[in-house]
Structures are given as C-alpha cells and as structure tokens.
Length: 80
Image (cartoon, rainbow, N blue to C red; front, top):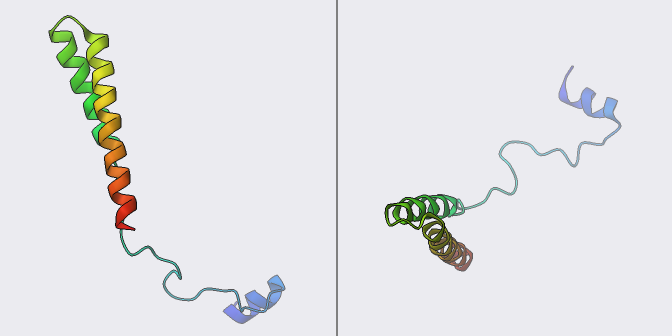
C-alpha cells in the first residue's frame, strides 16, 4: 500500500502527517544533575563511615548533592 491509500483508509486527509525530520527538535540537550546528587550521597556516606558517623555523612552528602543539582538546574534554565 502506498502512503495516500493508507491515509485515506485511516479516514484522514494527510494534512497532519509530518514528513522528514521531527518538527520540534530541541536545539540543545538539557543538563542533568542526577550524577552529582548520587556521587555526593555516596561520598558523604563513605566519608562519614570513616569518621564513625555514616548517617551524618550521608545527610551532609545529600545536602551538598541537592545544592549542586539545584545549581545545575538553575544554570540550565537560564541557558534557555
């Protein structure tokens, strides 16, 4: 079956069918801060465990990771 026959069979006029590349491709890839959050939590937990305070280290790593992830999000948002 050709394209016109398929469109007619579906009951559409074909005016909505996109051809070629996607119509709304983003011009840039967004930044991701998930790695910073994960790495901060792990480093904080290990550093805290070495000092005998694993939970405190984990929470400190979480706070630092959250701040870094928030900064990445704000920078990415400002780039537009």
